[in-house]
Image (cartoon, rainbow over all chains, first blue to last red; front, top):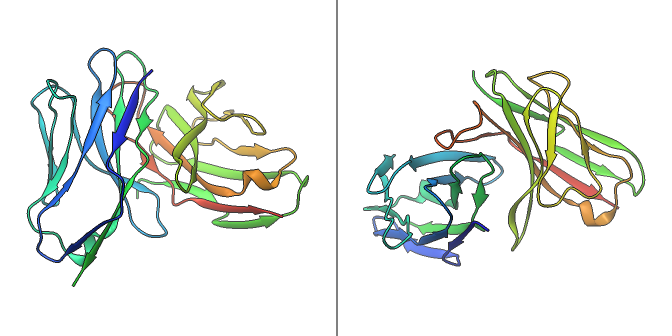
Length: 112
Length: 114
């Protein structure tokens, strides 16, 4: 079946550091890929998405590129802030139906 | 404001006492779903609904019931709660079935069963 694998956390960075959170997937067909963010005490919010190979999703300084050849959708940000501290979930939505699969989440902690 | 509203935010109950967690969305979304979030296990889908009167089991449906009598509401029912249902629950909705639509999530319900 479909699956999403994220790097284990927590990821701990200093403010203004470069961020990469790895995400790889297994799916049949041509899924859409998503990143969600969960701030403390809140629900998940859609951060960005990409619907086909080589698409780049971007939002709030975060970016991720849909790489079909490596089945990856890594999340990046050039300069993180303390306010980016949250849990980040990678997810895929398979073709033909909408039963999404979520990764287990990666906690990001940014220190001043 | 477009949103998914869950109630209550926090609930402590005793084993066996029936409870309902409500979920309502104001976006005319067709698709709704319930998840539970547990440490180390991520998000697991309990039930989902493609539209009114259409519901189906997710990955962990045991011990839960749902109904979808109206498009906007999708309550989660625990007929006889047990301590292993202590968890953080999220309701989510999407415009319709299809790969391009992301979810809108509620703020969560933290349930403790003692």
